[in-house]
Image 1 (tube, rainbow, N blue to C red):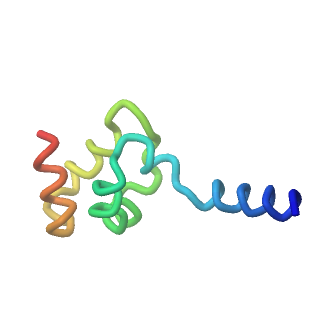
Image 2 (cartoon, rainbow, N blue to C red):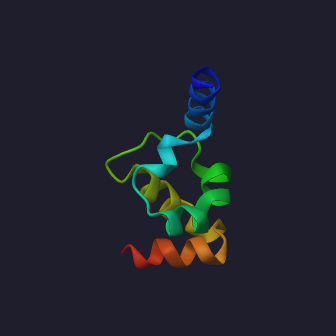
Length: 73
């Protein structure tokens, strides 16, 4: 039982994308998840880099993500 729980925890942690999750609330991540994956996936976390990447691609973002990015100005 402990082994299967540990394996589940490791797989769950590995599936999360820390680069995107670090600087945003759950609501913001939901709004921009697809846009992040499309335009900013390789962006290193921290220092506002993900937000800067999203801003750089603001004209291509979904309406929900664009609204979130604009609210961060």
